[in-house]
Image (cartoon, rainbow, N blue to C red; front, side, top):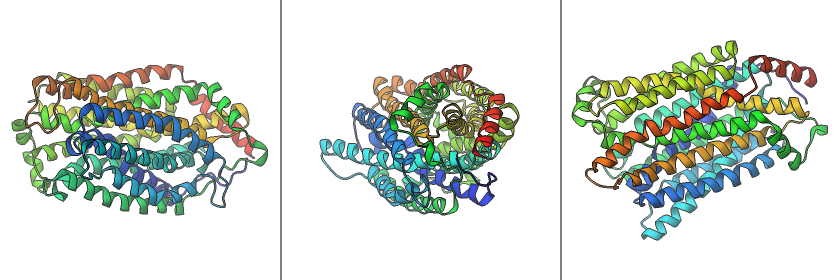
Amino acid sequence: MSTSSQKISVREKIGYSLGDLAANLVFQTLVAYLAYFYTDIYGLRTKDASLVILVVGIVAAFGFNPIMGVIADRTNTRWGKFRPWILWTAVPLGIASMLAFSTPDFEYKGKVIYAVITYTLLLMLYAANNLPYSALSGVITGDMKERNSISSYRFIGVMGAQFFVQVFMYDLILKAGGGDKAVGMETVMTWLAVIGTVLLIITFLTTKERIIPTPEQKSSVKEDISDLFKNKPWVIMLTLTTLVFITLAMKGGSYVFYFENYVDQAQLKSFLGPFKAFLPTFENDTSLGLGVFNGGGILFGLIGIVLSKRLADKFGKRIVFGWSLFVSTLFIILLYFYPPQSVGLIFATQILHGFFYGISTPILWAMIADVADFSEWKNNRRATAIIFSAMMVGLKLGLTIGSSLVAWILGVYDYVPYAASQVENAIHGTKMLVSIYPAIPFLIGCGLLFFYEINKKMEVQIENDLKERRT
């Protein structure tokens, strides 16, 4: 195992973070708008939208990601194993993201087929791009503190994309389409695709792979898979990642329904009065309210991200991740108890949830990189990409389950797309989708951490032992 200097420049950390900014322009759109796009813009029935998201997502999770992990670990170029994939997929991913959010004028059956094909293509290319990108964080450096720092930079990029999508995108869709949401969505996604492509190319140009397995550490696919299932921390992190992204997809994809149907519009208008002076361009109170609500959570989440590295260095990743996730869950549950008129409490709760969840955000991916180190430490073989591919299975599976649940649960609660007003049961369903339902996976994830064995002491031991071996 050969390495070079383990200290990473700020330039390279920023360059790496731009890759996640690019990927999350797509991913955050999927989280926040996929179910809404299919039902209220593209015109699919709730049950069909749920089925498309579920079936394609499961195929992508268990098909594309493991295959891509095996391929990436066995890629050998003068640019490294993982960086080339970021370059090769930059343009195709941009094209696929435009196609997936386009609305061709087909008959209903044709619309369903088009949705299946384009969503499949998008998830396939996303796996080919984002899995090597994520694995790259495990080979840029073996220094745990530098890895925590890289994760913090990376998730500032994530939060930047999340801020744009969740604060401004709904309003931009309305403006770009002149009130026609289909035209607006196509226009906005075209610009995001162009920007994302440029950012991915910058990531390729500014990063370097430093941890390079020596030839004698080559292993078969069978050995890599066997190592995975003997790796208890990997099993826990796979399950935890799935649960986290079920919650993120469920609550993130429900906010637009929540503001359109549950939050009292008169109280919202009154609450937003001071904000209108600073944000006069927003189309209406719903788009402004959704933007301020999401923006407050994201901005305070950034404060949590800034504190994350210092806390993780001092107490260890496991304990900081567990406590921040648990406290953030309590604020999700609180949303259930607020009536539609309690707009101030709704916004304050989102801010506090965002702060505590922000602390956990970069730690998750740093823990997955630690799992790759744990595997190398135990087996004297490093298979970074296949370990990250398993985590990407969890991410895609969580996104799939959470997004499909949004569409399915809305149907269960008698939600009707395009309706001027919804029945009381459907309105109650939107409240449940941002409170009780998404809290459940987070709480289960907190419990799983009691069985995760890589604590602060073991982190230090693994880092020192691997440094000695690599030297």
